[in-house]
Length: 113
Image (cartoon, rainbow, N blue to C red):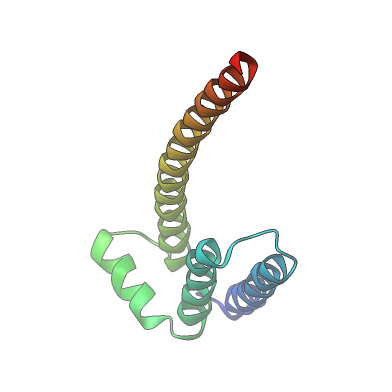
């Protein structure tokens, strides 16, 4: 990986982690959700500084460039995050449905009294 790409990855990863921290501090992102994103940003930072593991994985999977491996890894990571978020949204939707039903029952009980 050439020097320009490494410097760009370093800067982007640091800005990304700083942005995640800002989102947490401004209460737009929960701490539990931020851990995954901070770890992802730190992983990009580490792989930008220490390229040898990335080159090893690139050779292992038969890719031509370490950057390709990095983008592929990011794509796989985002697919897993999307699946994780989908399961959380499904659970929250079920919770909202149950709460709406309870509120309806409570309001009907009040009307009967």
